[in-house]
View (cartoon, rainbow, N blue to C red):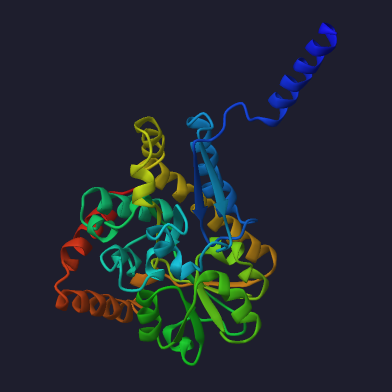
Length: 340
């Protein structure tokens, strides 16, 4: 009888052990973003960040990553974090119009060369406090940029500004939209995930995107003509967290988040984006697409007067609103001269 009772107890303990986690997470973070789950950006950057945090916390932090805008639409993701619909996000600041005007100076022509260069600039602007005031309602972890934005069209190759006439081009932000308007295009605002369907249906004739996004959002399947204007524009991104969620963490778990923030992860994001730019361009070449590179990029004498006019218009507009944009822009250019 005692042997039977002992066997029952042992079996019950084994069963309990099998169904009970050895180390249950104390905190679960819902990380929302809009890149596809199959994209390199999701796998190599955001999921990699989640895995690193879980590992360094010894499993006490669990990060659930929600790609493809499953928790909130792309323009609403920053607000979703502020209101704790999501605990954190990776998003484009310019998707929330007029909220990050100082941050968006990095979008202006001729500031950024590639993702590594742009990420160095924008993270420094934040660390120096020049744009930090725009993020008081969340806790930014790191900021970065994608590589140079290009023009990808379905039927007409753009080789000079005059070629934009009549073309409906997807624009990511109002800054880039104004730039395209100055070039003679008809800007159509939409987040990157909507670009494929819009082009497929003929709503737009082309898109402004980096090579990374042309690959990740499958634009290379539709657009067969590509125009590279080095330094035309870039976009800024932020990975940011709900403030109360961060502040509610115990000190040792806050340290895990802090250790996975700042310049190191900004640079890591840049490496991912720059590598995917190469992959996206190679895919277009392998498919036999036509790629036109403007000699001298944004400094080309045919393009520069138009791009300079768009830059001055943006700066003057913010200056009239009392924003210290000239100083931020000047510092961004100084950083551009020193960042690798």
